[in-house]
Length: 400
Image 1 (cartoon, rainbow, N blue to C red):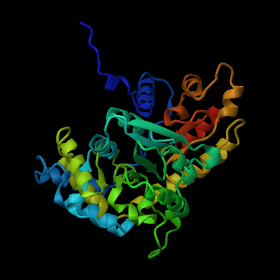
Image 2: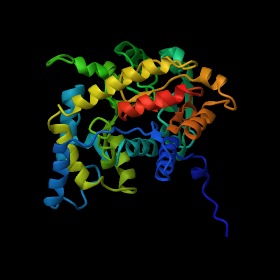
Image 3: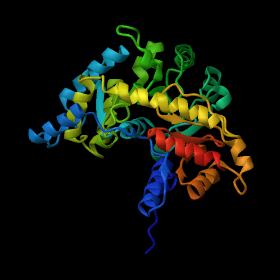
Image 4: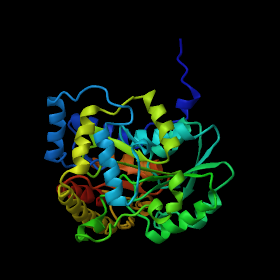
């Protein structure tokens, strides 16, 4: 008997970033000389005090089920973090801890969207947004914000994309894949548009909040560099969900802890969805996350300093390659150069996907094509790897 998969799953494509990473690992295991610049995770170990908290959780037998929405200690740490870093006030019933930021956004879509509801997603976007919307029965409305717009949506572009079916607007700043962040003025302008449309829920994905290069110049007591759309338009508080997690800033990708703060009824719906999927996040990881949020934050600075040094090298080196045009990032560990000129001069290559395949086959450099993020003619390069790997990679790309 032939198995017929659901229409739902057939609408969804596999994650291209995970696919590239898996292929790179497979080729390396087979003995090929592969440099993987496709993976979006820090190349640093989880800080020691956070690992010790996880070990202590095991030793203390904190290994059973927890409440679906997270242990009280972690919810309290999240509430304090939101207040300390973002000047946002939440109660425990407004917080949901999930198995990573990916599950947080999936929970939101499943709890909020009905068939045909539209979700405005600026492109380039994190690869999973449109597919999670599709899985929930929604319709992704992709609004391209290209390099000429510094990869950022304007208020006019947002207004033009809104229809009577618009249910959700998603913003990711600093952005995966571009590394750019919205200014206070840009966020306020978007917020002004959204205030005219009270039925639209706003999701701000702040996963890279702490990986902003401006934080390196931060002085004690100064105003935080980071800001999100809720900070700039507080009137959205009753219909804004703030998504975050510990994966990127604390080098905890495998621990799988994300969290969301938002309106009580929406968080309650997201909790219901989670209760019928994964139930609670891993208990051990939750105790480690408490230490990440409450503990010594100086562990972040060496990672951020290294990312900034690598960023500066990568942007300068990429721009020295004929046919490559790379804007600087504000943070994260990604660059998103335009490679249309490079595509034009490489025989047999006609688009960014073919360029990524060519680079992997001919040079052993694994990158993700920009089309995976909704913007053709680009590639995403992760500099969450050693400077030696980056130097070798740039040399190989320049050799085409």
